[in-house]
Length: 224
Image (cartoon, rainbow, N blue to C red; front, side):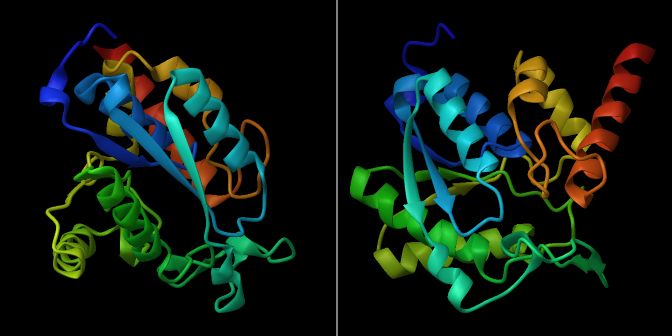
């Protein structure tokens, strides 16, 4: 990535899980800001499998990006859901799957903002999306905008919460990865499966959404 001074050395921190969406955001940020101006924050919130954290660490190291790991597993003491319970069956409950963690994205953005201000960083990038998503209320644009205002007021600092994937379908997210020259990289190295199966279980809501989007994009690409 031969970009010497993109964005006039403006810096960004990416909330990074090692999944498809956050890795796409990370690779895009590297191209827009330059590798030296991008950092990642990864949260250990008590997720039921370690593979997500391992993938995030490997990708950050492979891309030469500083990673900060923050332990927010205290959330397990005050809420329960299938994403943090090894014995729970992952299933849809009404409009929202039982993998939704109340307050998770609000907590992530708060901690990311605290860290970013300390580093003199204004741009915080997160891969949330309200187009092709599981019905999580904290992935909506209205929440991100309200959180941006709240963080600015809370810390008297001009944060800029950026959501490059907000209005993209999963197929369009795969298209973006391809345009960034990272389609194969993201297919091979990212982890999305709720169950924690290497290369995906193919059955959980996250795997189904990922594969459906990929096949839609590949079909569109082959038709051109």
